[in-house]
Image 1 (spheres, rainbow, N blue to C red):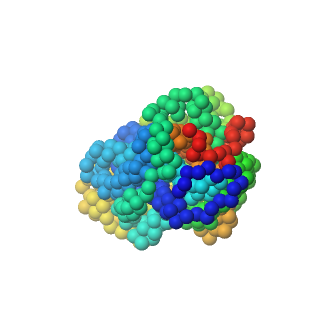
Image 2: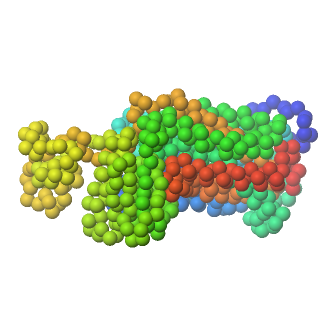
Image 3: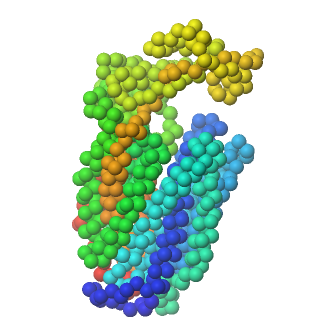
Length: 628
C-alpha cells in the first residue's frame, strides 16, 4: 500500500485483497487470544476445584487472589513489555510472539495435573500460566490495532480497526459456545470432572491456524517507512511516558476515553452475565446462551459505528454511548430482573429485610476472588442476604450486640463466627436455615432440595426440623438405601470418626428436607425480554468500543504508537474494567440494593464524559503517516 497522505474528504478507494487479508489475519488471531483469556473466567469454578480446594483456607485464598490478579492486573505490564518491543523491532513479529505465548499457556492449563497429583506445584504453575496469558494479552491488542490502522487508507481507519474491535466479543462468544457444546455432549458431571479441560486443549488447534496465517503477513508500511528513514525511537518507554508532551496524551487517552469505554464494556458483557447468574439466579447454561445470542446480534454494530466514526468523528459516538449508558443502566437492569426472575422481582417489591447491628460490625465487603470469609454478625447477615439477592436496610443497634435480621414478622438473631468458635459451623447452618424459611414464607423463589439422612442421625434431624412435621417411625418404615461406612464418609453424610466400626447403615431420602436454593423458575424466564435488554447493553458496548482503536492509534506518533496506546488501554480495561464486577457487587452489598453497584460504571463513565468533552481532540482526519 502506498504511504501517500490522502486529503480529508477524499473518496476512499475500495478495500484491496491485501487489506482484507490484513484485517482477517489480525482479527482471527486476536479472537483466539480473547477466547483463551476468557476460558479461565468462565471455567473458574472447575479450575478452583482442581487446583485450589485441597489447601487450607488461607493458602487457597492467596492462590485465588493471585490467579485473579494475574489475568487483569498484569495486562498493563504486558503492554509495556510488548509495546516497547513492537516499537523497536516491528508490529508483525511482536504480536506473533504474543499469540504463541497465549496459545501455549492456555493449552498447558488443559493438561496441567491437579493438586491431587503434583501438590503445591499445580496452583503455582497455574498462576505462572495465567500471568503469561495476561502479559500476552497486554501486548496483543495494541499490536493488532496498530498493525491494521497502519495498513488502512486515510478516511477509513475507523472501519478497518472496527473489525479488531469485534474480536473481544467474538472471543467471548466462541468461548461460551464451545463450553456450552462440550457441556451438552458430556453432561454436567463428566464436564466438572475432566471435560472442562477440552476447551483449553482446543486452543492448540487455534494456535496453529493463527501462527500459520500471521507468518504470511508483511510488516506495517508505516513502521517500514519509519525504519527506512531512521526515525525510530531508541527508548519507546522513556519517550512515551517520560516526556510530558507524550505522557499527557496517555493520561488523556486513559481518563478521557478508555476508562469510560472499559466500564461500559465490562458492564454490558461481563457484569450482565454475572448479574444473570449470581443475582437473578438464572442457571449458568441458559445465561451463557442468552449472552451468546445477544453478542451475535450486536457484534455487527462494532463495524457500523467504526465506519460511522470515519464520517462524523470518533468522539461524538463514544460520548453518546457513555451518555446513553449513564441514563439507562438503572431501568435496563430492573427490566432484566423482571424478565430473568419475575418471582424475585415481585418479592423484592414487597419484602425488604431489616438488619439491626452495631455500626462497627458492618464492613465494606470487597471480595474479588469470591473466597473471603466474613466473621462479624452484621457481615455474615448482609453477605448472606446479598448472595440471595434480598434487599435490606441496616439500622444501628447497641454496641456489642449480635445482629438481628427481620423479614416480614419474623426476626432471626445472628452470630459472631469468632465468638462461636468450634460451634460456628452449626450456628451458621441454623442461622441460614431460619433466614431461608422466613424468605420462603415471604414469597422469595427458594426451592428446598431433598436430604439424605443416615440412621444414626435421623432422630436428631427430625428434632431439628419441626417445620417438616416428620415422624421418625414413619420415615424408617418408608424407602431407604443402604451404604457402607466408606460410602457414608465419601458422601459427607458421616465423618470418619462417626463411621468408625460401621459396616452398613440405612440412609433415608427426605423430600424438601435439604438445603435451600434461590432459583429462577425456567418456566417464567422471559428469554426474549432478557435477550432484548442484553442486546441493548451490547450496542452501548459497540458505540464506545467500535471507534476507540482508531482514536488511540491517531493520538500517538508512529515511533511510540504501539507503546503509547497499549498502556492506557490495558490500565483502563484491566484495572477499571476488570475490577468492576467485584466492586459493583461489594457496593450493592454495602447498601442492600442489587442495583446500587451500577453507580460504579455510571460515575466513571461520567468522569470520562466530562474530561473527554473538554479536552479530548477529534482525530479522524489526522494522517498517521506524517505524525513523526
